[in-house]
Image 1 (tube, one colour):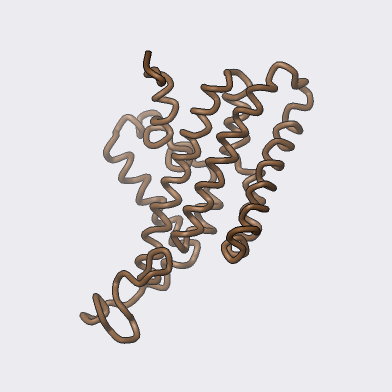
Image 2: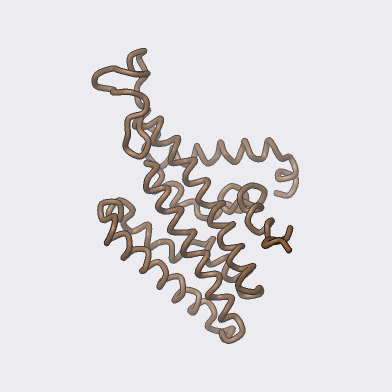
Length: 215
């Protein structure tokens, strides 16, 4: 018997494209705008959300039959806040400079509507395994967009990836800079992220016309 059924596989794959939380549901836009000027914080934020949403969905699912309906939002906030504190402390312990770069945005994972939405819409009504897959799938869908946006913003805005010069040296005029290329400073400010996300949405919906009809 396969580990993942077709439905289980769809829980992971659907949020990567046809039901992406950022490009289709238009959720979690704030962090996509704020922390994607460089690729490294984009990857770390993506991994953080994968951990918080994957584990959080399982915890909420395990507790779903004992959580009083009137306080379920409070319980959800406590669960996600606890997981975010763990992420924040790990970053401060092992990647302090990066934790300062992400700063308040790690804490804002607590109010990320993708996480609260999956707790409310899925984990409260499904078992731990399906909830785990749903959490991982939606977090991956969110993370993929962050990484794509961070990749293009850092590459075109600074000529680097993960801080390493990949287009050449702009001072010594090597690589593409030798033919007159200049870094696009616009790419490192938040409005550029909105433009990149908009382009991704346009490309995605152009490839799948059914998304336009549904929305």
